[in-house]
Image (cartoon, rainbow, N blue to C red; front, side):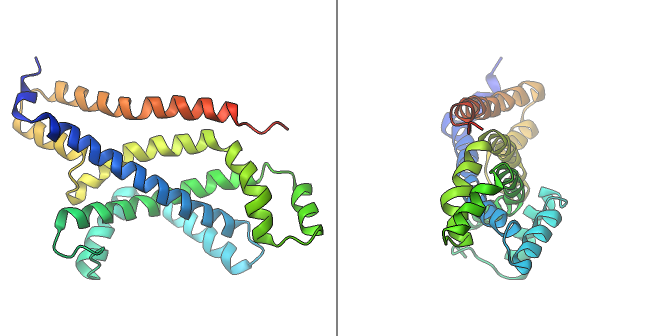
Length: 225
């Protein structure tokens, strides 16, 4: 039944999912950092920063991820000559460009999730902090964001699961992750449905435990109002 797997070494199949995991983890870290900065811009008292944050989120969220990933490859690499520090290694460059594209896209959704958490923090707390002389950045870092993160673990979990599935788009620029291997296997084997089921199960294994754990963590760390 699973004869099609005999043509591919286990390390190749597992290696493709390992690339998917790497894409997810690195993109998640980058998205969390950039998304938090964008959220800070969107609630900043500086009009220019608010305008940039708002424009970035509204523009990027309405561009298909495939367009962004292809732009990072054809636009940044081929037209502008961005090498990502590995000019002679196509696979490493494609991987890093894919991470860059995923971060740029996912950060917009992370920003909105965090901003919704910021809005749940009582305004009186920020006003009291400013009254004792704390700056905007101190209020945000010490009082607002810690509570905001605790209230948006659930939404951030959804963004992370979506990011895991979105890594399949990286196959369009030649990143050797799970979707690219599945495409190659389907082209060489006749068992399309079975191959699709195997890879679908692989993504369920990646995303289901993550969703369950972060759901539990969200309930445990929920801010009591």
